[in-house]
Length: 382
Image (tube, rainbow, N blue to C red):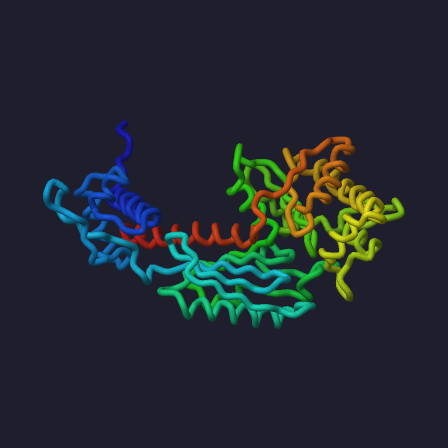
């Protein structure tokens, strides 16, 4: 029996996808360049360009290639339409709100930042998110097709809401980013925990063999952990996988206590908050007189936490990120503690330290934007 042949609609859709993907990589190209880039025939490429122009997804830029005298025919340059749409990447963090408009070429068109007070209530955070989004929307062309949100707090997997968690250091109360941002977007709003986005960014920017099985431990004002298995972030039933703050470990007196409470015992919390005082912690671990005792306590506490992570997740390595997690003295302390565990772990610092969570969210926003543009073309071919 002869295998079924692909339908003309499927072939047109695949052709348009190749042409759009090439333009996303190269910004502007002639039909001849597109044919060479995609491996399609010139007539097939020309038909695809015609369809995409009719759909309003591609435009003739008005620029012409140099031709004549042995350089071939003059060609028209084509590019993605200016109003093809953008993606929005939003970071909700203790430092403030950041919103970025990203185009289909992967360029950040505009960035807006809004400060927030401490403690941060849901109403104040929602107001700041709207303000940053409004500033971005007013400076980009076309619709916002996708929004991806990185949130410094537990995110319920089924509702995409930020939920109140015991001793949560940042957001007081619940927040629904999807509901807040829905009026600004024509497509979905994707929300995930900031540590999960940072782990994805570390996976994608890692130099060397591909990272497939690792734990990403974030040590900053708050504590977090993302578990990556077979290259994918594991969220758990409710989305709370990796929340290490309440893992039972050893405290200053050697007794069992929750990890988050160790910092209260060491008097390293910010006033009136469960948030860790990063500057004081760094000063404490590097203090010539009392630093050894602080390091010993932290080593025991973090070592016990990593022992639990190793037993349940079996990571190949543990990557440590965050404002104080990557400090050399802290890393040495963690590495020493990990070496004493029943199952020794490889510890290393995160390679990506500049806005890793936003970097991960931005990459997802770009990927989804490009898929949305391609879908707009392929759906019209059916």
